[in-house]
Length: 93
Image 1 (spheres, one colour):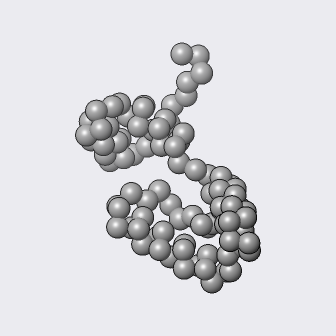
Image 2: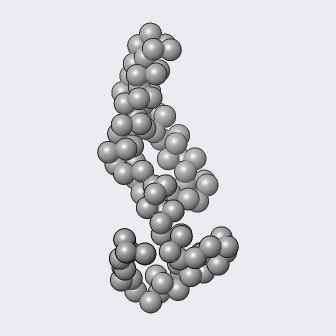
Image 3: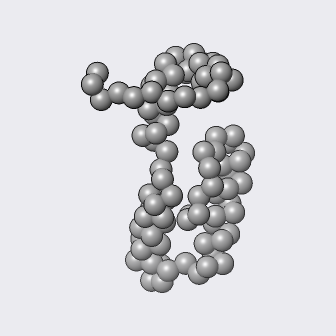
């Protein structure tokens, strides 16, 4: 493939990626590509949050209050922590 590059990671990170890939029945390459493709950027999280606010405003007749957003964000963070898979903090809920 002409559109390829390489990345450098520590040996420990490489070994962990190899273990994770094996557990998921895939390759390190596919694991990293899926992570890059499937993990939203902060801008994408913000866009999703704005769309959610607009849908809630349409359904409820008003946008959620900052307090309601904070409660929802806290709940989502607790749920993400309980699931064990968390790729970074989201600044928008």
